[in-house]
Length: 308
Picture 1 (cartoon, helix red, strand yellow):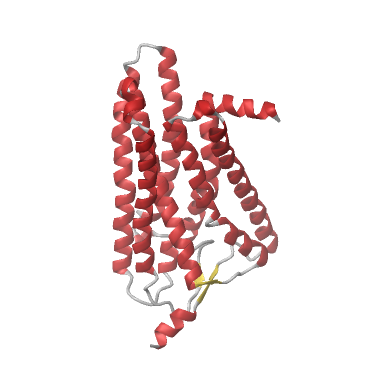
Picture 2 (tube, helix red, strand yellow; picture 1 turned 180 degrees about the horizontal axis):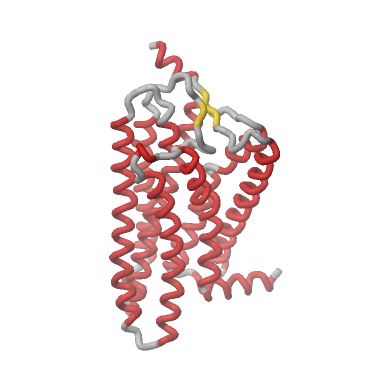
């Protein structure tokens, strides 16, 4: 009973990046700049796609939804991280920590599934161009988008509940800048082997199945591109697909490093550094990668800028 009472009243704190206030201030400025750049870039993509009827296609529909997901994904982490950097150790309740973890897992898993959906869209567009509009109907696009969100929800809820049923006692400093699963589990005063195994299995399924589907799609896509007679067609197809491949490598590479590494080799400091990449840097790079390598999106952006 005493353990339950302690757990119910516990508050977590996030370990600072440095004990030097000047370094903390520099990190705050860097995080704030990255967060605002991410919000601006992803919001721009979502608005441009909505404004221009020429971009009302399945590919840009998924791209706009990916941009919106990235906004919410980063926003589930950044405000609290910025508050801790600017005001020192800001406490977060057990419920607050669980809520942040749920939305981070939910949006991150939905993001992974959506990247697989986008690979399928490119597969249909390049391998079956004449049947593309028939196969990728708007109703199917909406169902695939909703399915990504539903899968993200179904994977995040039980994992969050499982972790926050652990008892937490005295050590309440999280060696991270948000409530990440491995970092929170390290604070539990109970045997976490089952929880670590559950985290590993779910992470392996969430990462391996979509990545396998993406890989299979791109085997067919590359084969179809090589067979194209038009050099312009090949260049356009490679340009579109290379953007997606770069985003996939960034997202899946960093996530795999954190959640599929053996627990014995887990380094809190390294985990925190890699997390900065996929919570702050990757959401900035996504709109840059797509806008720089996509002619239609660049042209739409230029037309929008001329109006202002």
